[in-house]
Length: 290
Image (cartoon, rainbow, N blue to C red; front, side, top):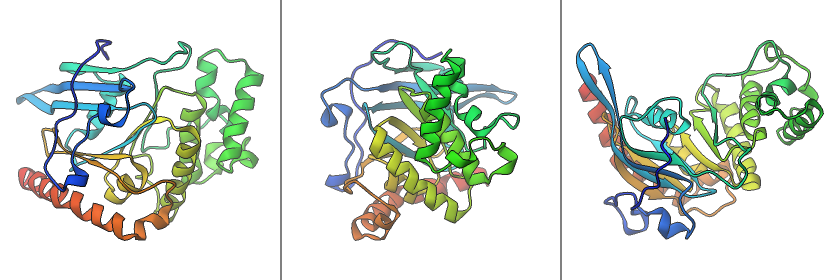
């Protein structure tokens, strides 16, 4: 389970252009990090012996920061997120989410790529589910759920069932269900990965707007480099298997952002700088699988 020991130190520095060097949480804020990972390793026991999925991974995430993690397939991105969520244990190292002032708030909520909605519940009852588990009264949780549905344009679908709405709508339900529960940290594992390109663009814009309003601490896993740069305050690059922290890139593009931001010269420059390193890891991962 996630330990509650405080760690010290900062994320390793990485090579690259000066304006894209790695930075530590202490350089971003004087407040303690919200998520701390120190030398985290994950080793699975297999029929062929031990297999290291994540190796010596260290990362600080500040309160209110939106951090995107990218890397080749199979590099351990989702494994790390599951460990932060407490859904999987780490084999060694230190990993914790720093609790907030309100002990009633959950430490985290997770949004997965799959449409994790309950087919037997209406849209509004799906959104209210986490609040129900916390013992919030039905009138109050339905009021909160209705407000969130209003924010993402789904209020008129509140009493529909999941089979009556589109895939994009289902994923909006998953996202606002996590937000309605008001977690300390929002963990997102390729939440837009299963959507068509047009719906994905719409939801990227919605995520930008929602984050601007809430300033939640977010760890976001994605295979899309464009998505990582568009959404994140930092892009964390993981190496090919086993997953290690290869480089950290602060996103210097000013907020607020929209999908049109991707057309700018600064965006293209950043994409090229990150891909210079990410492309090598993708090639290395493919060679290991050959």
